[in-house]
Amino acid sequence: MNKETLKEMFNFTKNKKETIIIGIILATQLLVYTFSYPFIMQKVVDKAIPEKDINLVISLSVILIIIVIIRFITDRYSEIRRKNCYNDNDAEIKNKIFKSIQEAKVSELDKIQAGNLFEIVGQQALEASQLFVWNFVGIISVRLGLTIAISIILLILNLKLGLIILGTFIISYLILVPFYLKTIKVYRNLQRIVIDLQGNINEYIEAYSTTKTLKLEEINLTEISKMLDKCKAEMVKSSKIIAIHNGLFSLLTFGAVISILIIGGNELSLGIGMASTIMLMVDYVDDINRHMKSLLEHVHGLNNRYNCFLNVLKMSKIEKEKDEGIKRLDSIKTLEFKDVSLTYDGVNTILDRISFKVNKPTQIAIVGRSGAGKTSLVNLLPRFYDIGSGSILINETDYREYKLEELRNNIAYVFQEPVIFDKTILENIQFGNKKNIEERQIKDVCKKIGLDCKIRQLPNGYNTIMNSKSDLLSYGEKQLLSFARAILKNADLIILDEVTSNLDFEFEEAIMKATKEILNNKISFVIAHRLNTIKNADLIMFIEDKQIVEMGSHEELIKKHGYYYNLYMSKEKI
Image 1 (tube, rainbow, N blue to C red):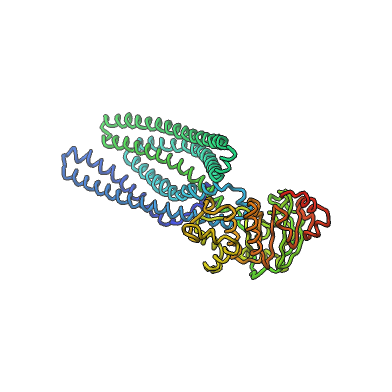
Image 2: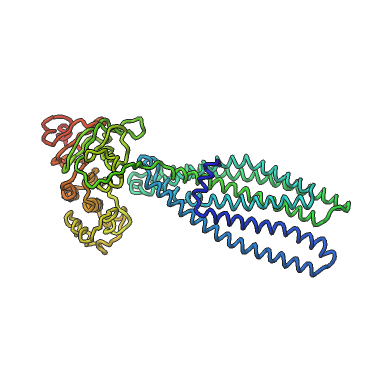
C-alpha cells in the first residue's frame, strides 16, 4: 500500500476521529489487561498461595474481575461503534461511487458491464468501507499494542527466554511477508473473477427472454460453471497459503515452548527460576500463537478489502464529463455542424467532416444502413460524446460554452427502447421534468396520443405502479409513455432514435400521431427504419461511409436517383 493510496483510504473514511478513538480505547484496555494479568498471577502463585494469604487472593481476584468487566464493557462499546463506522463508511462510499457514475463520461461507462457496476456499488463498497476501521483497529492499534506489551513483559519476566520468544515472533513475521505479497495477487485475481461473474449473471438475468428464445441455457450454464471453477481455484490457492503458514508457525511455536521448558526447568532446578515465570512464558507463547494466527486472518481480510477498495477507488476516479460552459441557454433557434468528426478510441473514425445548418423549426430525418453512424451523430447533440474535431454551434455559439445542464434542459430524447422506471405511471411521465407539471396536463397529453383510455382501464389508473418488465402496458404503449414525457418537457430540440423499429403497424400509427405533437415548432432529428415514416421531413440526410453523402427533401433526393432513391425504391427497411 503506497502513500498515495493510504491517503485516499483515509479520505474515503467518514468517521476518522471516531475510528481512531475506538482503536485507542481497545489498545489501552488490552494493554492494561496484558500488564495486570501477569502481575496478579505472579502474586497469587509466588506469594498468596505459598503463604496461604486468603485476603490477598480475594483482593487480587476482585481486581482481576473488575478489569475483566471493564474490558467487557469497552469491547461491547467499541464493537457497536465500529459497526456504526462500517455503516457510515459504506453509505459514504456508495454515495461517492454513485456520484461518480452520474458525472462520468458516457464513453467511459460504455466500457463497463452493468453487473460490474452493481457488484462494485454493492458488495465491493461494503468491503472497502471496513478497510480503514479493520486496518487501524484490527491491526495497527490492537495487534501492535499487544505485540509491544507482550514483548516488554517477556523481557521483564526473563531476558533470555524473552529474547527466544521474540526471536520466534520476528521469524514468523518475516515468514508472513512473502505470504502477504502472494495473497495480494491471489485476492486481486479472485476479485476480478467475482466482478466478471456478477456482470455475466446480471446480463443473463436481464436477457432471460432472449436466453429462452434462443435456447442458450446450456451455454450460459457452461460459462457460469467455468467462472465458478476459476473462483474455486483461487480460493484453494488462498487456503493452501494459509495452511502452509499456519503449519510453519505452529512448528516455531512448538520449538519456543520446548526451549522455555528446557531452559526454565533447568533454572528452576538450580533455584534461580520461578514456576510462575515458566507458566506465564508458556501462556504468552500461546498468546503470540493466537495473535499471529489472528494477524494472518487480518492480513487476508485486509488483502480482500484492499483490492475491493482499489476497485472502488478506480470507479470513483472514472473520467468525468467536462463542463466548462458558463453561458445560459434559454432556447435553441439555430443549429450548425462545422466539419465535425468523431472517434471513440482516438483511432477509428465514426463520423468524418459532418457539416449542415438548420433553423427552428426543422424536421431532420437521418437514414443510412446499420452502423453508418446515425445514432452517433445525434448523441453528439446532448454531448454524450466529445467531438474529435470541428465544432457544433447553437445560436451561432460553440455549444461547449453553454452549461451542460442548460444544454440538456433544451433537449428531449426518446430512445429506441422505452425507458420505464419502477414507479407509478404518473411518476414515470413526470420523471426528470423540472417544470411543475400538473396532473391535468399529463392526462391531456395522454389523450392526444391515444393512451389515456388504456391507463384508465388499469386498477389504479395513473397511480398504477409498473416497471420495464411489467405487462400491464404493451411495448408500444410503454413507448408512448416515453413520448408523453418528452412532450411535457417541451424542449426546443427533439431526438427520436428509431422509436418505431419494434412496433407493429397499429402502434406505428399512434407513434406517428404522437410524433406530430412532439415535433411541432421544434428542431428535430428522427432516425427511422421505415422510409415512408420520414417522407414529410424538411431535410433528409443519407449517411454512408461516415459522411453525409446526400441531403435534401424527399422529392429532391428522389430526383437525384442516388443513394436515397435506390434505397427507397427497393422498399428495404434500414
